[in-house]
Length: 362
Image 1 (cartoon, rainbow, N blue to C red):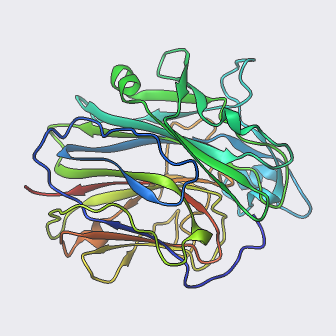
Image 2 (cartoon, rainbow, N blue to C red):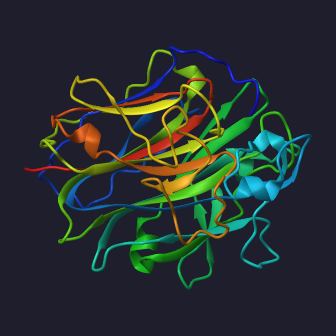
Image 3 (cartoon, one colour):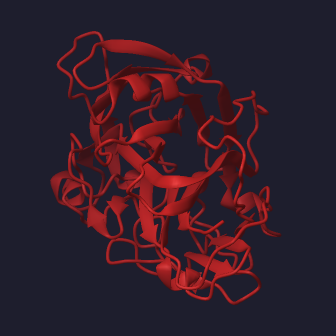
């Protein structure tokens, strides 16, 4: 996207108070329908157990040819600095099925003998580019589990947002716990994701992320949390509050934080993602793939490393982010309250989900 508005004071705030619960923690949270227009993030799932959170993700659309003086498409796909508005964009389709017009694949990895506690699939994109896609198709995708055939997955939540640059955007999600619990780890394929192709100043973008909370007796005792919504950075100049919980984060705790974002452009400035324990100053979360000032930069990474098992495995996803950050430096003081801050700088992105695993004690 071009012509980004620069507003230094804007920010997305996620105030999160994690808790050590003693009730039945392996049960999934209630999946109630949400409002049609998303403008905040709310807690979707929380548990305290020996385990963690795993993720599989991929983008559903990529470049076909450059527009103007942009670098070649294959250079961008290999990790170049191209943005989605620099290209004519077209669907990725890896399944060789003539009945699907887009499909991408990613591997879900779980430690041995893990039990799936909760799984949720997120997908979304821009419906208005060179073509216009009907919003009625937002709430359904096809999913193929490892070694299986496609089955239809219907969303229980669909949220949308329109922007002044012409983008007509949405995020949908569905509880897929039973599917993932039965199928286990392996390659998942998501097809027929509703996203427009073509070229415009807003750019074409879209993708999916599968978030899975699991229980494993050999893993540390952790707080596992998932928040979701559809928050537009340009709409939250005063901050974004999120549901809170009491908790116990010991000093020198380990942990990680994952984010799902849309239309984050590579090469933006002043964009930051910080995490603070209690009321201390925030610590910037960044790594070699997601530098400070350019957190949402069209990548699918795990603590700075490319994620294996994605087909296609483009390093620059041209507008889709699903990244995991090591949070240990921010958690070092310990405390009972965690505060996330997402500051967009000059990049007007959309935040779809945040998930965290943080060491705790009862």
